[in-house]
Every structure is written in C-alpha cells, then in structure tokens.
Image: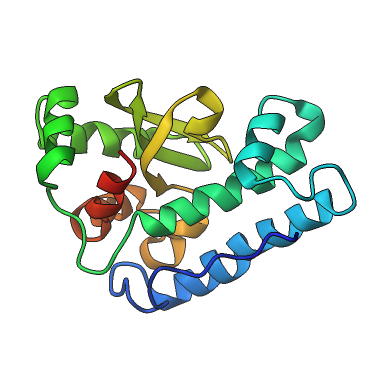
Length: 196
C-alpha cells in the first residue's frame, strides 16, 4: 500500500494574501510530494511497506540507521498536520476549551502568543514550532528538521512550519512577520480543539 499525498483541506489560493498560491505550489506540490515519493521508494518491498506513518515514525525515531525513513515519514506527517492547522480567515484569539487551557498553561493568550512566536523565531535553521499536550497540560516546544512531538511522547495540537520554503516566497527572510501572520490570520483553532 503506497503512501499518497493527502489532499489540501482548502484550495491552493485560499490562504492568500497571507500565503500565496505560488508558495503552496512549491511547498505542497513539490516539497510535501517529494517526501511521499521518497518514503515510498524507501519502504517498497520491505517489512515497512504496509505500516502506518505513525508506526514508521515511532519505530525509526532516534535510530540513525533508519534516518531516511524517519525524516520522510515525519515530514509527511508534519506537513499534513500543518495544512490542517490553517484555514482562510483564521487566527486571532481562540475561545472555549482551547482558550481556557492556554490561559491555565501560560497565564494569558498574549503570553502564549509571545512564547509560541519566540519558539518559532529562535528555532535555528529548519524546523517547527509546536503547541503540544504534555500529559494534561499545554506546552510549547520547537523541533529541528523533521523531528516532532510524537517522537518525544507528546501530542501535537498546533504547528508552524519554519523551514524557509514555508515562507520565503511571500516573506523573504522575515520569519517573525510570517509567524505573526500565521497567528493573526491563519490558525485553525477548531482543528486545535479537535486534537484535544
């Protein structure tokens, strides 16, 4: 059973003007798709070819001999999760259970926003900023390259992709502006709540 590129949850131009159709053409159509193609080549004809992404990630995390499988499987998972973390006319302050949990963990939405942005902006090189469930409490973490919360026993709730290909067409080298835009105009808080 070959892995397939999952459909985007919206049209390629739906996040404009914040994230352009051109960015999604490259980021989704080229980068995300390449991870799918590469993973299929790596697992074809092996004991791994019928495993789920999650099983491949857990079985290969931290094993240098399985880095290719881990990197491609995790990047497919990370990107699929990231697309769902955004929606047209999203962003801003959440409400309901998500807001209650953010306020319990960080003191206020503004403090959460500050800490999440800081994690995204200070992730050196390529990687991801995350809002996670660590036990029963929300926390923020950042991971390099393909690494993800699942490999550390935590549950992902929200992610911002800070690999340059996620924002360079639209924001050039202005990662802080991209993260502000993500938080203010794109976050799909209903998706975050669905992950609780």
